[in-house]
Image (cartoon, rainbow, N blue to C red):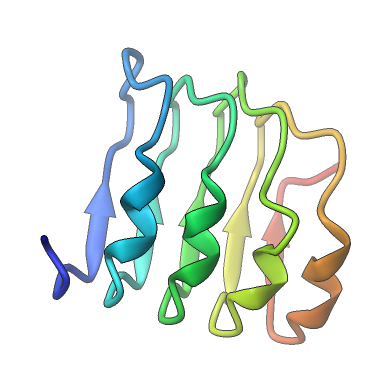
Length: 105
């Protein structure tokens, strides 16, 4: 698979409603942009992306939750959830000292 892929942009994917569970196999991924997609959740396998620095979920208005183990992504620096349907963040997110959260109310 695409194990050396560093950036994945799937913005505006209005037909994209579900992400594959094997997304976590993209072991070199640093930036994942899913803005404006109609996904309802993010697969827990994303927590295996040890190099992920930026996760953009802004305006994913159908998104209901984030994986509970999101705090396992130690490199995560920016999480953009502005306009997303998320009502709460997972507790594990408190483990990420360098994280900047954009748009969570």
